[in-house]
Image (cartoon, rainbow, N blue to C red):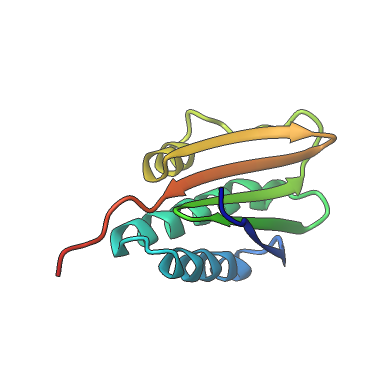
Amino acid sequence: MGRVDEVRLSIPADGAYIAVPRSVVGNLAARNDFTLDAIDDLRIAVDEACALLLPEAADGVLDCVFLIEPPKLLVRVSAIVPNGWTPDTDSFGWTVLTALVESAAAETIDGRLTITVTATATATESL
């Protein structure tokens, strides 16, 4: 098993800042041999994860952790949320999120909800 690199990012829970984790995940995926289509899918999935948490972030902060273990990239987007709140897994946003990545899950621990998405670079694009 190879080394796992970790990148951490905290942003204000404001739609104006969602471009930051989107850019970070795109850069990390490109550096780890994801195809252009897979990079776009991962960017959209991270957008959706952030958008789901954005209005519920009780302290006004979204935390993002990017774990890189080639060929796998795991992204955790989390925020402190109101007691008992979970994302609607029947919503359009959740459907988009789960369609774009290998796996997606939501988990709440001590009032912090974390949405985890996983993607694997599996193929190279032909020119």
